[in-house]
Length: 210
Image (cartoon, rainbow, N blue to C red; front, side, top):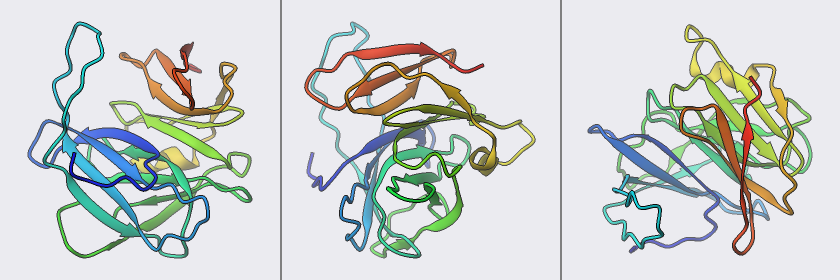
């Protein structure tokens, strides 16, 4: 509560600066590619009831981080966080050309100044209209989804985190969804969950590529 939402598109989880787990929310949508800046919000992850029932949880104590792209405004719907460093990455949603990958220059810290994002790579050219992404808790695997497909990238423990973006992906057949936009690893990383945008859509579970 207490913050505005212009076009929230994705969320991720990663380490808090002082330990524990934080949630990251990306106000990164920009269909017209016209916004001068984007905003990322970070808040400590709350306790969730173990009953499995829905519950209203009021999240307070957000940190907000304004950022700008180094080249031009981009539309984006995918946000991931490096689980080792807490640095957020944004994968753009391109109608033409490859999806671009940007990151914060370091773990975000509260500041009144806007931060300039760093361009760190791009995905294979056939992966353009990216609608969601997730990274495994160990940071060795990355899921990227579009409206028509799911791709999993992997790296070895000896490779840097950003090696994921230049790896050769494996394809995963998605469930039939009218507007597939969200994806997540299941607990244990042996399966994935996907869901479509829309009112009360079903959650689909599928096996990972490996």
